[in-house]
Amino acid sequence: MDSILVYTTFGTEPDVTSDLWLLPLLGEREAFPFLKTGFHESQGQSSPDGRWLAYASNESGRPEVYFPSFPDAGVGVQVSTNGGPQPRWRGDGQELYYLSLDPKLLAAEIITEPTLRVGTSRNLFGIPITPTTFANPASIHEYDVAEDGEHFLLMVPPEDATVSITVVLNWTAGLQR
Image (cartoon, rainbow, N blue to C red; front, side):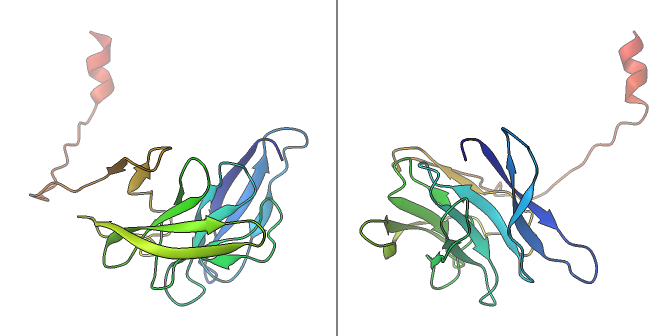
């Protein structure tokens, strides 16, 4: 498929899980499930060549990163081995990044020829954030990676984590001046 949107849907009580769905942006434009199970699947990330879809799932009892073929969910490969949400692809698709639960940023080599397999994951660096995945399956990615895999952008909480909220009532009245 040329243009496709990957998104997460959420079930309702008692089946409060999340599933990955696909929406073709050309042609019929009818959404269909990619992965629909009794577990949480979220954070779908299409590989740069469009052949694979990395995602996080708690089917092992903790968040792990997997990737099956795409757009047909064929046999997948587990990337992380000790927990790992928030997958992100390097621009050439030969490396997949994810967060460990301790928390560190890891990189796994992805080998697709002659057969699909995952190389050893290596520790890149510790990060000053705690992944929120599966505490809230709708959580956003807390980092991004440049196409070359050399630069990373992290959402880091401020050192003084004091949060203040200002609520402005009747704010539209100020627009009439």
